[in-house]
Length: 416
Ligand code: HEM
Image 1 (cartoon, rainbow, N blue to C red):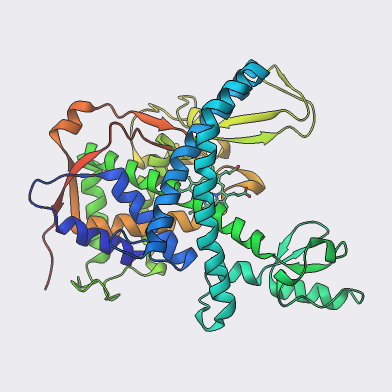
Image 2 (tube, protein in one colour):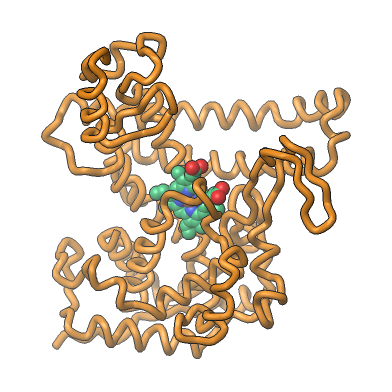
């Protein structure tokens, strides 16, 4: 992660004095790169000329873009059921057909890269490195309850089940029908591939959104920037700066990340104001009454984290960016902890985001690495175009038609 953030810094260094860049595109490139390397084993560095990397990068970006339009369509249909009538269905088909075809095309590219990663890893066990591909290939699933277990747990169960067949070495050679209920089996290749794709969709634009908004908000709040830089400088004071990008000697170590408490507060407050997953859904398992509203069993409900995060009943002056709200020592934080459901950027309950820890560590590392080297200022034109407009399709992100244009200012390097 740090290597990718350093490569981004290297690109910022090449900007001419006063030359601006667009923040969302830059940060999305970073999160794609981190993801490609940690999950697919593919370098998605923007400088990488590799055809496969280029295709995956472009396909994923276009997929997000097109999927956003389809998500908006679904939202309108859920809100206004008459839009599902045959007349509107015909219009929709006409309107969305091209987009659906596009999405399927991008999906095919993404699928191919994921399958390639799976096959390469299967054929070359020496390439194993404990990443998501390895974990998926090692995962064992029980056909009875669909629960994924570790190899160890699965083997224990297989031993206990005298009648169970031995664990298949290669999921490809069998299909679901070959397994008895309750029998342990590996994930089939297409299942592992689909999991990888879910992670790609869930894990890149979300982190890009939070990082983009946090850098934007920091430029707007000099007092926050000052406090953040103080923390980063204090906690990295003993780490000698290395110009060599390949060097890991100046990387902040994983076990040191927990000390960057203010950096974490900045990210938490950013996700309060701009939760990347603005809403998520739940289906009512039984009839219930909530605040006087009757919700029938089976109803799919949208839960808006965005609305809850902006509710003055829980958040005094909800529109104000104040990371100190997340200081665990503050009274505000203590009072709020009585109601854990007023903050849910990662969702809640058993289906909450599986990548929340990974996301927080990735975003902290990115902010630390970038702010050790740079500060940022919006261009005059960008300031004139404020307030920021939002695009709330797939994830909450800045409206691409407006963009966040800024200049990067190198901080004085301590080379002593
Ligand atoms: C700032 C970053 C992120 C945010 C704000 C975020 C937010 C969310 C939200 C709101 C959900 C739905 C939760 C629910 O229904 O209760 C979700 C689900 C999910 N997220 Fe994230 N996410 C982030 C990063 C990541 C990353 C980095 C990964 C993967 C490495 C990831 C993987 C997933 C997966 C697989 C699910 C589906 C879980 C399930 O349905 O069981 N997310 N995320």
